[in-house]
Image 1 (spheres, rainbow, N blue to C red):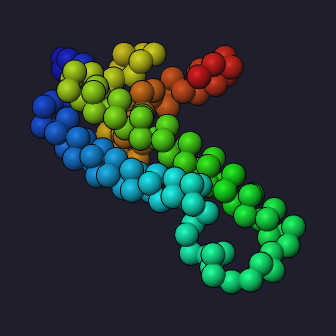
Image 2: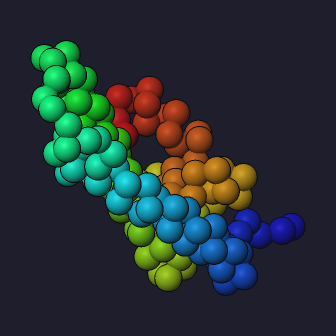
Image 3: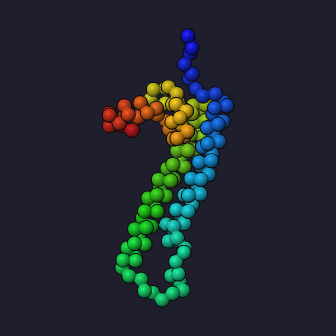
Length: 132
């Protein structure tokens, strides 16, 4: 009778670490791009050198664009935090263990959502109960 694995091996954790570090690098670059848009309005305009022919609609579109970029930046920042927490779990050798069931989260799920802390079943169970 085979015993059920209780954690991923060091080799498997190293594989996930590479995936997460790559995602983290890309996420940080995207976050910085979004921050630049929010802070400077993109920097591609000619506001300083051209006569002012801006309209209320232009101002509204610019504001909406900044708000959307700000919302995206906030989501990206949370994603970065989640990836960083996943790296901590790798170091603690608790990565890939469902926080509800204690079972291993399937590798396929972790490759798609490397910061996952729940199996799909646990996530669905919590959703039915109205919890996250």
